[in-house]
Amino acid sequence: MKIDNSIDYNQLSNILNKYKQEKRFTLAILQDIQTEFNYIPKEAVFHLAEYLNIPVSEIYSMATFYKALSLTPKGKHIIKVCNGTACHIRGSNILIDEIKDLLKIKPGETTADGLFSLEIVNCLGACALAPVMVIDNKYYGAMTKEKIMEVINEYKEAAYD
Amino acid sequence: MKVIINSKEYQGLPGETLMELAKRNNVDIPNLCHKDGIEGQGRCRLCMVEVREGKKTKIVSSCVYPIRDGLEVVTNSEKIIAIRKNIILLLLLKTPNNDYIKSLAEEYGVKAPDRYVDYKVKENCILCGLCVKACEKMGTSAISLINRGTTKKVSTPYDDPSKDCIGCGACAEVCPTNAITMTDKNRIRTIWNKEFKLVKCSVCGKTFTTDEALQFIESKLGKKEERICDSCRKKIISEKFKESFKYF
Image 1: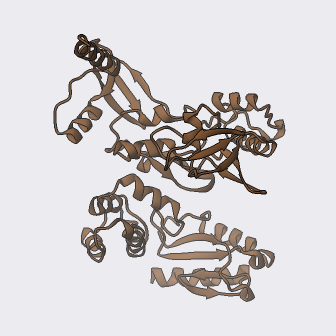
Image 2 (image 1 turned 180 degrees about the vertical axis):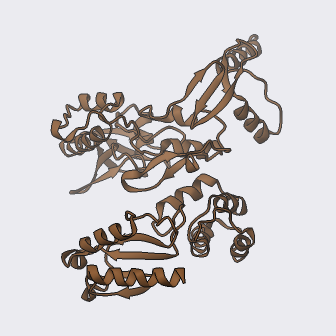
């Protein structure tokens, strides 16, 4: 899989047309762009500024502030490892190190093939499942080093088949 | 509206903030992120003062605190000085090599414990956001506060030369700690990774602003502006003034 840096303007205008040209919709539009493109493309930032008639700097400020918005392309699958108190005690750091070794990425980064992104989150509210890991809204509880390998290989196989 | 500051009475104007009243009457309240003409931001927290309400007192930032009749304020109580020292210490740790912060620290006798200070840090910005506000007031909004937490900084989008920047230098002008580098060299001004051609004053021949800034002003005014620098303009106006009052 290759990361494509040019964006589809039709897709973008479909998102923009859902909203009125008002400043208050900035964050909602950015969220939609994030879900649609998996990141906030540079072109989209400039396009949005023009659409809402607000300074580019303001949108950029917002896009860099919220953790839910990313300026670099996110992977197809987003791995969230919980590092809340319960998960931390039950060894989430071991999980994080294992994923780092397996995928050769640090938290916040994306693999070269664009398949996975790794994120560390602070409590997913599922402490009974500690240590917990989430991939694309699917919860994997009571994770161990061995299980991680299995789960990640599953996703890899699905992608390359 | 009567306001008592340090047991002296002052006449306040409606809608004023404590800081404005104090400044107008030359009462010293230290501050970093306040500038006349720009509304208070309450960011640097250095302008904290004590407000007395009956038996209770509370600590407020004077730059955003609106005055009201009968307000009693103390600007230099022990508590306030202690808070100020604390803030200055934190600023000193962030920007240990900044001249202005160093002079503030000296004034208040603040010394940072050596083991906490990294003297190699070249940071000058205290993230007060005054430059962002000034840019917004100019109507350009080329810079903003980006990222958050420890990586927060002031910059243009993507750190690229911004098409919105007109090189007016308002941001560098208002910066309390001189954190913004603007160089004028060989008729070229460099600021925020962008280069501007400087314009010469048609009277004295000194360079005073950029082409882009003049064009921006002209587009706002809708008419051509003469290329005259501030001091020459003042001279011309005072000349005219003299002329019109000649026969009084």
